[in-house]
Length: 620
Image (cartoon, rainbow, N blue to C red; front, side, top):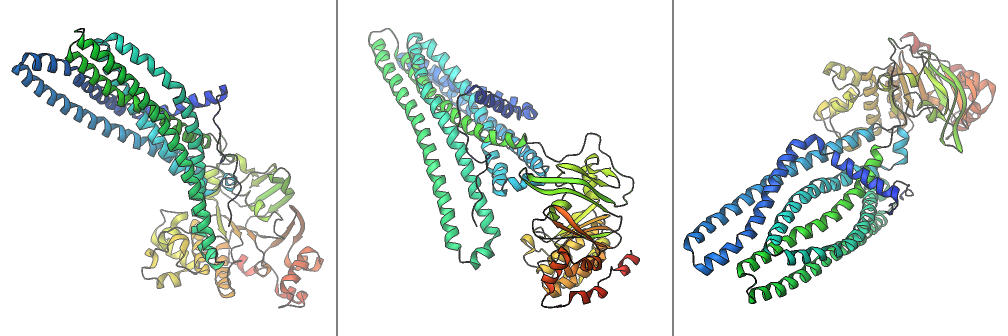
């Protein structure tokens, strides 16, 4: 098992300072802030608490001057008592306001993340089947889980930090300028010197963050592959190889994280150096002012307190720039996914049919996954209502591609697929898929009860219909032997059941749906002979009275079909009943002889026993 090549959407984008890239950043930032709009009331409340907390911090710096100049110099006990209670009150209010803003802002942040995660998941689920074939599940999981979590940090932390820390900076700068305008101005002039390296570091951090997201998606992809393929991995003794592969991905992640730590640490170190320069200037200049009686000790220490308190919010603001860059990297990937329109959608004025006869027509259908490799080439075919049509032929002949057009997993590149004479692209997509039941070789079961897995096609179905569906699918016998019956949890992908049992549950699910059109895609190919007989009997129950498209490699399962179509290289090369095709002596007969060479040396002899199953039709 190896990872598929990295797609363009997975490759880390190197942030450039081009006008287009800057426009994208502005657009992404605007959309990020737009996520807050539904929560603006709570956000305004959080902003109020932030400003109150910021004002309390500036007040503490201001109180230093009267404490030193009046209380200690003039020994004013009354003022000391007042300042003591005032300090207690200010700190208490700061604590209350800080808690309130933190609680409200995090509530806003978690709700934003929840809304975005649900929106992203819903958008991905609405994509056509081709989208899932192009994007590995690990990458999509990483988008929904990892990238969205990074958005939370950007929205909540950045918004909180910008408002609260800017409020603190504004209040403390006011104190600084009131105490010593010249010295405050000198300190402010030094700060712009730090902006250039911080911006450069931010761009680098955005690139590293994008790479980190790609690596995390790769990690999740490896985990998904290896956990789902545990049986194959152990059978080939590849456990050690997979551990080394996972460890290698983890090392890449650590190396990239350490590069991010380097950038963040350098940014912080620059602020430390700048802070030290400012503090040294203040001590030298302020100390001389006090010695020369140009300033009071209270004013000096009030200025120092405000400067020291200013240092932390300024450091946080530089870190916020890094947070913004990481958030923008995640946002670009998320918004890129959200901006991907589904390839298959309902038309603006979608139709539904009052009744479904079940006639399916393929009218000069062409289809291609890649432009240079057409899968279907001008297919013309009509399936009559209630008819069982079998599709056979070599692998890659176009069988699955053809049936996938019926539920509109894909749309034709040219031509049209019609239901009762109406182009499928004119019909409501949800309604259309309600008319189709699908049973495939790869049975998908949920980690839930037997009841829920059968009822997945009609969640509101009553118990008696669920029992009837299980009975018709010949599943009730083994279901009743389970310790909890229908309430038994069958585990992830139904691992506690045999292949035949899983297939019969899938058939029960299709029976319960009671759709007029049925697609059977290799429904018995992975089963042993005994299980195949049971499943085939269950399928016969399911096929009664329905228009059925059957894909089968085992020709023994389709000899009684009303009609058989042989597809090769995307074209229909033969068409007819089993007996007719055997008599032609073409591709179908050669394939039949190849399969039954050992068990039936004279395939012609089987023709008399291979007539269409009229009994099934009569019972329809």
